[in-house]
Length: 124
Image (cartoon, rainbow, N blue to C red; front, side):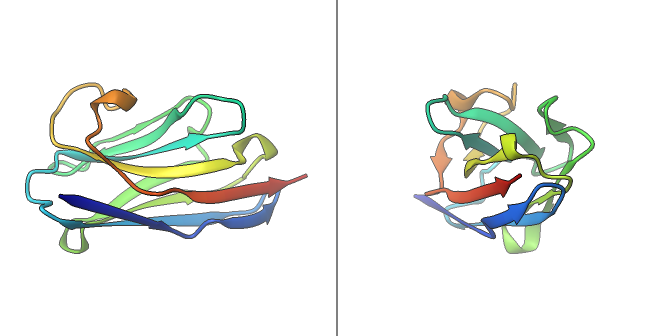
């Protein structure tokens, strides 16, 4: 019903920057928020950042505050994640997600649609 496609991943040295993009297509009119999650090898998927579609309110995991910035372009149904001062521990597959309900945007299970993920690798 809703398809999410991520792009922008790659390999970068510690201290560098990357910008991820996620574009939604399909029946997107009822989206309340979009977010970014990541999953490193051997670890569970964790919340990174989210943004509400109506007001543009942003939410961040403590581990990325001050380094990552989430933004959106409603007209394009696209959300971005600007990642600065990258650290090796940021290495993971990053997933874009969308939800059709309000609430705690940190909760993985509350999101209804997911992209396929894009690999981010930060070398030391």
